[in-house]
Image (cartoon, rainbow, N blue to C red; front, side, top):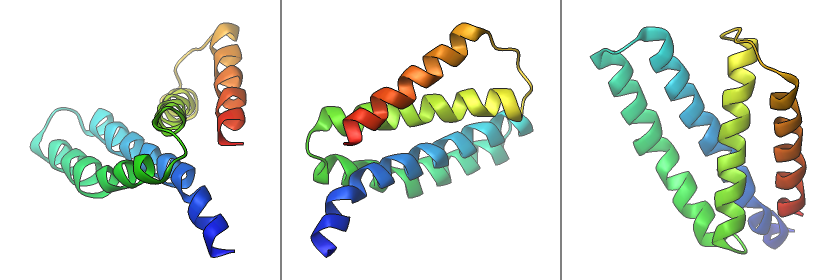
Length: 110
């Protein structure tokens, strides 16, 4: 059981790290360019999320899987944040792209 959890930990680390980077970037967009937003970004991205990405690349079946899932998660976080939090206008093509990214990430995780 422990070996199964360890083998699945790579994508959990990628999703959590991507969410952390998104939170740091969204905080910077809300606060604007100032030292506080820069320090929050540095703290979250480099101090907390960087080890998640590195460990994920180490234990993933391949670098490509971990990289694609992390990139897709960050793109989907940005897409969701732009719609739900920042109220940006998106088109049908954006929704189709988000669904394609979800399907591709799911297939890579399996």
